[in-house]
Image 1: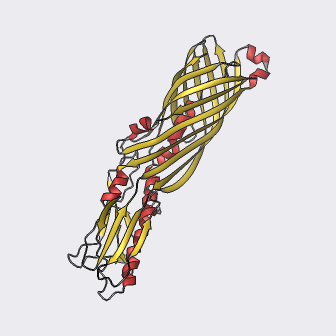
Image 2: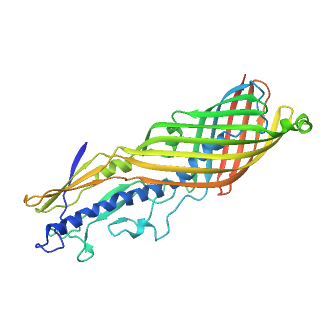
Image 3: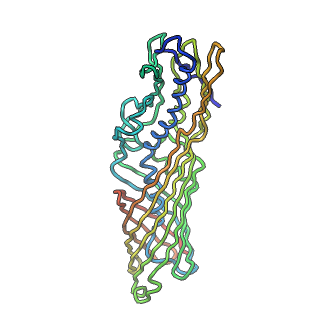
Length: 379
């Protein structure tokens, strides 16, 4: 456990005859820090939360025609999504702008893909009797500290890559099942930046598709294919980053001779989970060695992030007249959410027999554009 000292002038700006309870009330303002930090992470990762798993989800799209009974396939899929513009936080009623103790140094909120520069979260202790920031009586400085936070990548657009190994099997009766797996999706997600370390990461998905035209022989014999599927996609990871390391190193401030705040941090990172489910309708036509398909559908995406570990803060009266006051600060990331949208697009499969190439383009109702491609071996 890394240990360091937050030496805070809790008497600055209030009378020297103030009671210990007043000092405690100022000390407990630290409880505002985790929820504010969590709100920052929620906004910073907004575009990834909304779009990353969609990129994997759309990779499962193939064509309207299903595999023959007993047919098996293995392949490699890859893709990416792009959307405009990146998320910006300009609502002044956001908790990031309305907290008495906390603020962003430059007044702007960086998100992963926007143009905002690296900044810091500033925490200032407030004297409840005056409503003003506590001042160090030794040098007149305000008792505050700053936590460095990353800036945006400055891309001006959202980009989310994906890649996976795919498997499929024709179960018969016009039905097939497909799945994908990527044990280390962080290799793709890491392309978004170098300030993050991703471990225990795993992405997977599955779909079940039924071809309706197996019940309409006249259309099937003419090369037409109409099918529908349901699909599910999920990923999970543990994420460590500079934002959490800075949290350990930046908690510091000036001190006086009356009180000391000892802080021990055991923050390890965050657990991150995404899941997406949806349904699609395909209409396609086979022309010799190529099949062209159009599709439309609906999906729902959920996400959550939870911090691992805590920060323990102890207020110590150096005179020994009062017992220590302890705080356990948790939930530096604690949020979840969801989004849904409709989508449509087109795909093609080139080839017959044991080797086939496929590609698809998807446009979503929220303005996202996703492209996927890959190849499959059929047995």
